[in-house]
Image 1: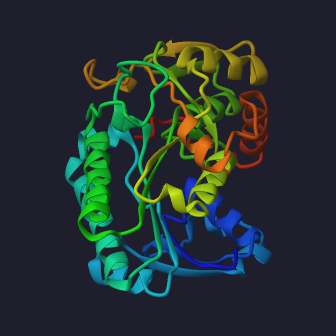
Image 2: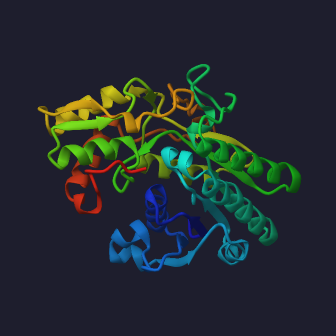
Length: 327
């Protein structure tokens, strides 16, 4: 507590929750938000003034090495979350994922090395594992790039590993499984279903219903980052943040329909189907390694997290376009 920290991607979904948690525990937070002509701070704009006033906001771009040198300067801990995340858009624009996810991570790692940063947490994703070859998925599971997005995240992870091994940069690779909660983009499945239901749609349009996922509530994901940053033994490690519980997309949609509009029905939308070899069929993780090192475990049940998420979306539908397919 009380450390000078940098959060890249602080304007995003997980980044804004992590920033909020860091401020709450007394850290001095510099928040890197993606430069834009509107001067928007993303989801940081929605935080209470008492929280926002404690954040040093910097607009920039992880693709700019000089900007990252400036951003990282003075930080004792760097939480690197900035990334392009949507899988369907990575089919459309893979170059942009290489520039942001690989080159952007390289810029952050180089800056941290030059400044002698004490800790660097690089955010990975469970998508790097691809369809589970065994469950529960631990950190020794092989990698499989089933989308351009996952391929760039694998590359970023391996760059981070190389900086630890080559230059003794104190890096930890943090690998959350599917995170959900307030402020999540409509590109993710839970907001996709919730916003369609809350908009009054009788037919809920989805892609494949059989794949399974391990869902983390966002506050638990943020708590995992904090626990890892406080653990010296985590340096050089790759750590899953997972609940060990899986649910299919179809079961998830049925539960949300039950809670919001039991009259709605699910319709398969061909535009939302991923190429067969790209669809990750099963993700079920274990956070045994993280628990052994830090004691972390999820504090929210899936049911409680979903209830909080629905309640938040009810009050924030103006920020979402439920009638279109968000790539």
